Length: 245
Image 1: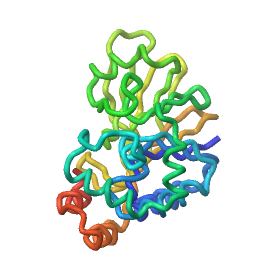
Image 2: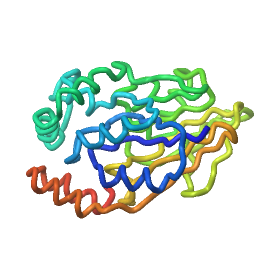
Image 3: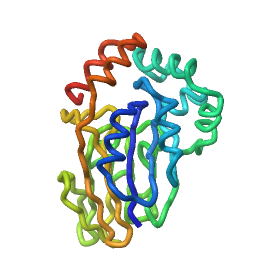
Image 4: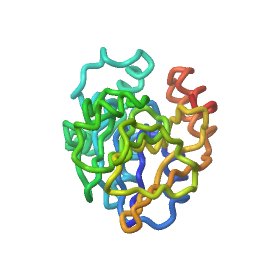
């Protein structure tokens, strides 16, 4: 079974479409949260993802738009787009956001899926080896896929080692996994990368060969920026797409 793994789409339809086209054939989509927020096409992104056999978690922006998180926890720029999204989102799509798991952590095919981290599924940015080590006791599967940080990275604890290692996810290079090691894999962000690479980031998980392949694809970010300008989004959110920050 071939799984398209996406996270942090953030209402960027151009990026999502580029990912879907680049991925080729897949059987299911695992979305690690934050379908909405920051971007200008929330209705379109929800509709597109729901066309597939989809497992989707609730990210912090999804929860905020649905009124399930207090807005004081977000930056002013993020709050502005959350308010805008609430205004433009259709009733059916708002209902769909509300139907997502309130604690965004699920297990599919012996793989843990979480938005932020197993220890704090909504807010923790798991970006260091120490944080990954501290989260090991919160999972019961050998593989955990997480998003939230918008940074593509892998942390691995070998079965015969004591330390957690940080390893790069090389694009288009299948990573062979085992059921003995414990790994955390963040595919990066589809709609708002923050690793100084503006290309949309995603992954392909092959359950038969037990491999994960990190992928990047260019998309028409200028068109996305134009839509953000038309919606009068904060300039910082518009500019950051160009630099992947």
